[in-house]
Length: 497
Image (cartoon, rainbow, N blue to C red):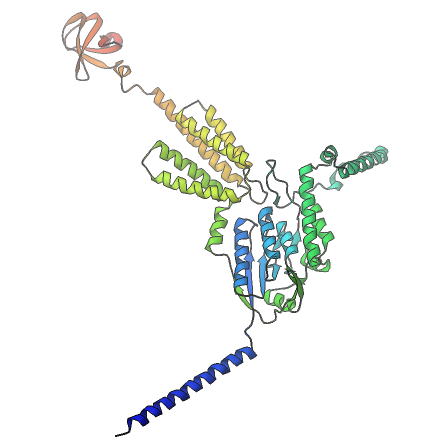
């Protein structure tokens, strides 16, 4: 039988050898990891809609994720027609303060970085475009309503001077000299801040303020990254555009790349300007990881869609009206309050013209008032007019407008409802009365006894005192012509017919 102490020593020896082997293996793996570090990370995002609150939230969350994962670069594939000035500026502030470089890449082919997209491209650490893309049209659109936030939508087409009618040749020189003199006078007045001259030139003080602010803003972004500031000013003042190749030639962008891999290959070794100084990019072996819009972004995009928010407001209003008119039904009230809260949340982040919102609410109230208190169409027509005008001017942005067919459809639906209510009330007025003394007039009764002057008749199973100008016999049918208290005025059916 083997000695137990020797067996224990052999077990301990083998365990020691196993521990040493495992330790050596772990040390070798750690050394190998130090010798060959892991490839860096490039976070790829996608913006393919108008710049708004949902895109702003998605973009800033993407920058936070890139910072948490220690990404080397954030690449934003962008295709946008423009959007809200407030959301655009929030995105630019987040981009300039980001510790991770951001490359804005206008792609795929056919995409554009119009209006607000041009500002974002100038603010990015790296500006890149795919072939067959374009940017520009960065003129700020002054919004209606007198005091709304500026928006950055597509500019209105300018009149072509060549299509304007010219004066006859005999007075052409004089007209040209007078126009030049007027233009020079207007230019001097504008430089001195003369509002009257600005109005003659088709501008207001507020429009000039917004325009000059936008010019200074985009020039500061261009100067920060060493890009063409003069063309940027042109894009704001004259709404000009550039293709990808032209933008590269005029130093508006740095790279024209066919895809993400080509972009990363061209960015390797390039120096960019960060908030804390310059940094050299190392993008040769980066691993691309997608950070696409999630359900939260999609939900915000749906709720903040002007058409959806508008429809939610209509549903909420009518839901509450039906609940108040039929207390205890619960379903209309529940749906109405949820829809109304969602609409109010959307209006909080959208550029809403509150005069338009007030007109919509007044219009809906007048339409409901027409249903509850018929005024032969006065309240209803006024409500529909106020509703349509308020709906048209509700949104203070060119890229975030309510669909005119939706406005027309809801207005027609409200008009149809009002017309149906009016026809119902007219039909009810034409019906004979079904209760009260009015119901008795015209009814047939049966004489219970012979009488001349006053007697008794049976009407609807009841015994009534009756008065007749003619003698009546028992069992004769009579018609009620009037009611005098508890006495019926009757006449024989033959004479009444």
